[in-house]
Image (cartoon, rainbow, N blue to C red; front, side, top):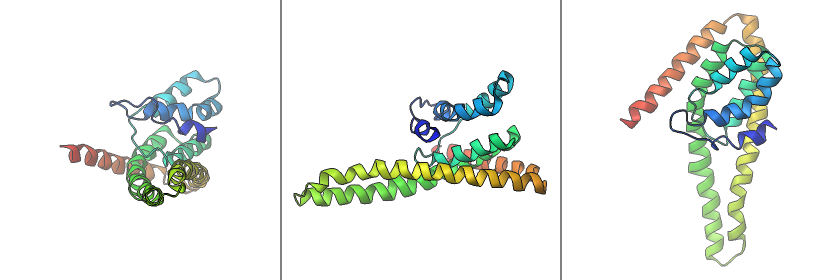
Length: 184
């Protein structure tokens, strides 16, 4: 269900929070499951998820899976916010490079080659792109969820959560600064 919801990440895209509404909508079933009838904690988690996020729509599954696992594992709000802030930028960069810049160009180039030769596969091949994209998103969602559960348990046992929160926050702020300074 979360994989289908993540497909609508950009459905309410806006320039203030980018994909935050879609991200929150995708996370809502998990947040309701974790916080149940505690409306105050649910509202706090939803507010945290409504903060600015701009990542790759096909690879957001990794981040959603990780956040879902952290929510279920009882991680602190600071840790969840810090990791989300630290990871959405690098995921966007990787996804844009691999999915948009490489995979899409290869698939569409292959389709054009067949079409120019008069082969009807030229009309079918471009439809492989969304299939591969959604499959990758689903796989990354599962991977992020599994990684998150293990990471939370290991971090809680080792007592380095504050170091991870600080490091993730610094990395996230660095990525935000890079985004804003590259536009100037």
